[in-house]
Image (cartoon, rainbow, N blue to C red; front, side, top):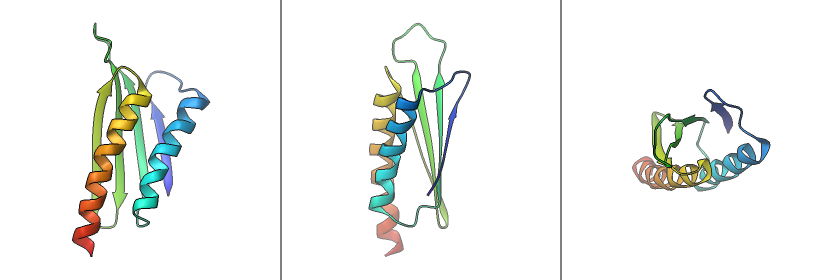
Length: 97
């Protein structure tokens, strides 16, 4: 699977990038037809603690899956987005079968 990680207006450290690769990589174990994934990391300029946003777009044959989550940390947001995508992947898998 081709994986692109884009950190908008900041530089993501190696530990965060490895965490994201590991989490998103687990989707490929569920469904081997995943073509590629694009991840966008953003920090919103807001007064709340929950200002870290992770957007994940997953391309599969004939479709595109998307999840966006906002949490206190990128790890938390990535975890929540991957959980949402797992549900979408299993639904897509059922339709394809």
